[in-house]
Length: 84
Length: 396
Image (tube, rainbow over all chains, first blue to last red; front, top):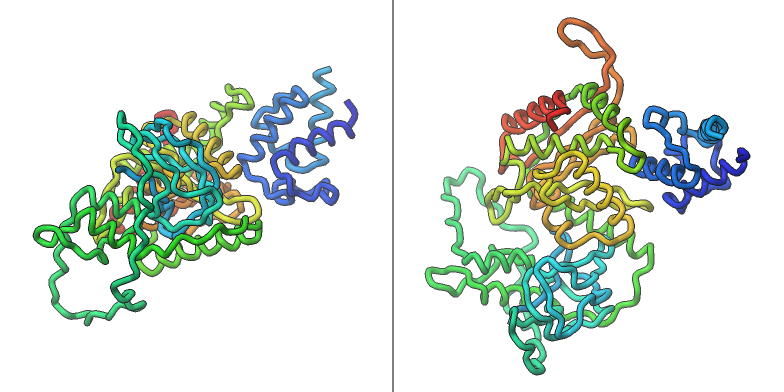
């Protein structure tokens, strides 16, 4: 899976939960929570959606590694490479 | 004949628009069943019925805006046969009394007057008044010894209710936002006008509770993980057992404690707005059950499918503004409740314990309480109980 595909999967998961977000202007290095006004419950659901879409079970201790778009893409691509 | 009326879904609600009937004439309904969807200032609400019976007539058509207390449908009791066509409901009588003055005459503060004797009200009349949102202070009593009876409450409700408005156009999103702002304004202004708030707060070390939760979540699949908010809710429900005068309602000039803890949770909605639906019987739910109930409530609040009982039954409110980064919440009580518990953000702080200095995660817990129902000493005991319970997370 390419980074672009991972990025798209992540945006799909986020936009299902925060549909009114401006995803074209999302700053890759700023916290997603602030930019999309998502709370911890939303974040939990994003983790569930990523699990369903990518088959990655992200442990809670790693949640902080998915705080920004670019960090999350890096984290997921590493996890997926290790898995494959 | 029993009637199903537009319920009051909060101290601030004056009217609602019937969106949809979920039952039809001749259908048997059970107490607690969702029978209609009503659009309120706070969004769509699934309204439950509080009697068993058979639907006789659907009086109100979908799309109609009607005042609180207006008959929406008639029922026949369980086992009864629907009656024939009923006469149209009597037109509300024109107001026979002048509206009360906007500002009540101020009594001299020092006057040694005895408090007014509590009015006699039959239990059925009290229940009806609460359902219809009728202020018992303003009901003219005709019963023996000046007691208020059901008929008196009904008369008062009719006097108050304006004629039902004609079909109103569908509200636009900005109308809805404005309506919700108005609803919040009405409830909060009433709160600050009538409730003598007192505030107490303390910083609670939540390191043990968070570590316990991390260990717990490590064993759970991604779908079953628990948010710290559910742990806080559990601790609140348990602490309320120790200080029951924070759980209940202030109505008709006195505090009425509630047996169950229906924990209302302040939820911010996307696009602005605030709604505080309740988790029923929180006292009987352990942490995982509270998490499931909280998740369900959040989803439905955002989808606009909360139930009427969830909006009216809350006996106390918890608000958690930590998500937005603030450390301390000074809450406004939602009337007729008598307390609101606020949690701020979980932060790392230097913390002294047994003479040693450590970095610990802590949270500021505050209590806003109605001084008519409790005193600061009891409020302080509540926060102390909350602290104690959170130090033993394995017992929650």
